[in-house]
Amino acid sequence: MPRYLLIRSFEVGESQMPTLGRRSREIIEDEHPEITWEHSHVVVDDEGLVHTYCVYDAPNEGVVLEHGKKLGKHRIDAVHEIAGDVSPADFPAV
Image (cartoon, rainbow, N blue to C red; front, side):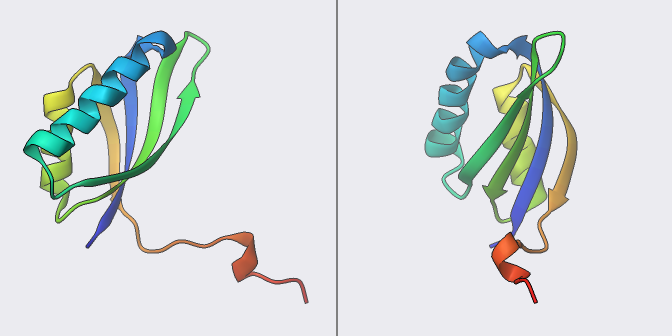
């Protein structure tokens, strides 16, 4: 199944993110079981607003965007299909 990286900017501060995280999970479980939320990296900017870098397994980009519309309180800045993963172990020292 394809994997996607979503870059998001939220309209809320860090203290409101647990509620949105639970809501995101509920939407997936109740309305989009074809999506798997792998993980997210969270960044808080100088104004206290949250930006996330989220990885999802999904059959297509459209279903991930639909999930985002239902979640609300953010904008999706970019969606990229992930071509692969690498780690330092993939580049051993010579």
